[in-house]
Length: 209
Image 1 (cartoon, rainbow, N blue to C red):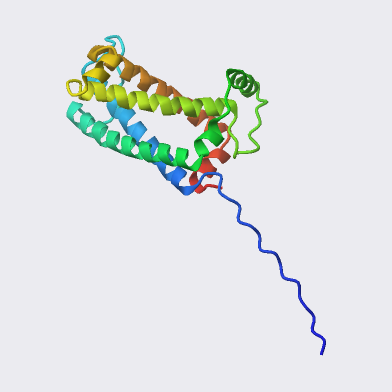
Image 2 (image 1 turned 90 degrees about the vertical axis):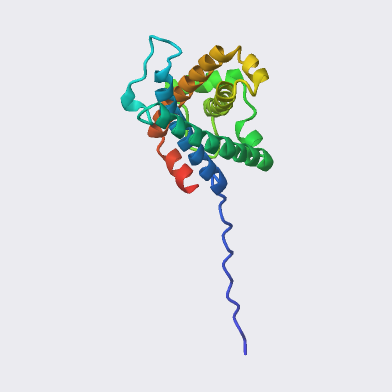
């Protein structure tokens, strides 16, 4: 009896996610912590303004009063610090940090910025960051580190005198902290605008694909 062999189908190789699960979790936790710190920080700022002419509208602050804002601020601070350490450690250990954000040059940033403003910047491949994205994400990582260090210089000024002096003293540490928070707020606005222009990027950060 002659038997007929039926060819078997080759199993398709699974496509790796654009953003792994650990990245999505740490990203959203960092975003939550940063937003809580920003809104509660504005309430703390209003209690003793660094710049007398600048007052944050209470309607966009968190905490209701100084004591409540401080509780929110410190709770989010611990989340940001520990989750941020995990985020950086996994990015470095996996090699993703170097692969995604480098190489990077001022010329590439300027070129992609001009293309973005003129509507010529392609977003076809979400696996690759353009130079503007690389610069923006590296910037916000550095900005968050400055926020944590300047906040520590304010909160534990006596315990960390070297850090306080590196910031230029207590009063200048408050200025550094406020300016870093203002830059983070600007990043959030630009980031949300970019996501609105390319909504697929939000879906990939939610489901990884």
